[in-house]
Image (cartoon, rainbow over all chains, first blue to last red; front, side):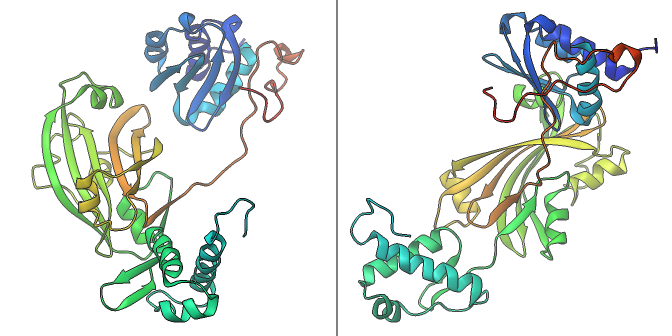
Length: 83
Length: 269
C-alpha cells in the first residue's frame, strides 16, 4: 500500500469529523467546499475538522459545509475510496 | 406580454416599457435621448402617467437615466464583473474602465471576532482595515471593507493605502491562489446610497469574500455594490458527482480508478 498523502489524510479526518461513514447520507463536492448531509449533526466535530485543515465549517441543521479549497477534487476522490 | 389577471392598464405600461427596453438594445446608443413623453403617449394611445411609469421603471433598473431639465437618455451599460480571483481595479481595467479609490478609513486595529474567524487569527490580533469607495471612470461602484492580518504585511499602511492590496500582498510573496465569495441582495443603508450616489433603486449586492494563498488566509472583505450599475458574471461548470456511502464499486482495492457514487441530478437534498 502507498504511504498516505496529505489529501488522503485530510479526507480520512473529514470522515471522522463528520461522525464517520455511518453518519453520512451524502457529500456534494463544490468548487471549494464539501457540502455534506449527515444523519445526526450532534456527531459532527467542527473543531476536529478545523484542526485537520478545513478553512471553515458551517453547520446548518443536517447540512455541514467544510471549506477545503481547490484541493476538493483530490479529496473527493479520496473520500470516494473511503466511503 | 399580457398576463392573465393583469390589472387594467398594466399591459399598456408593460408595452411601453418593452418598446423602450427594445429601443435601448437595438436602436439607440449610450447617451441617446429616448422619444419624448408626448410622442410615446400618442404612439401607444396611453396617458402621460402610464408613459412615466414605464420610464421610471427603466430608470430604476439603470437602463435609462434622467438629466434634470434635459430629458431621459440611454444609461451606460452595467459593469459585468466576473466572479474570479481578481480585484476591482483589475476587473475594471479589463473592461476599459479607469478604476479609482477614495479611502474612507484606514487603520491597524484589533480584529473583531468575525474578522479573526475569517482570517484564522485570534480575536484582538492586529489587522489592517481599509474602507474604500471604488469608482469606475469616476462613477461610484462599491464600498469595500477589507482586512489583512498585520503579521503578513506589517508596514502595509505606512505610506498610505497601497493602490492595490493584491499587489501589496504579492510584493510580500503572498500570491492569492483561491477564494470564496457569498453574494446577498439587500437594500442599501442611507449612508451607502448617498456615497454610491444612487437615486433610483435602493437595491445593492453585499458580498463577503475571503482570499487565500495556499493554506493562508490573506484577505477578508465585505463589499456593498450598487444594484443599478453592476452585474455579476459567474462561469458555470458541470457539478461533480455526489458521494454516497456504500456505493463504492467492487474491485477498487486492486488499484482500479475509483468512480464516486452517483445520484441522479435533482434528487432531494
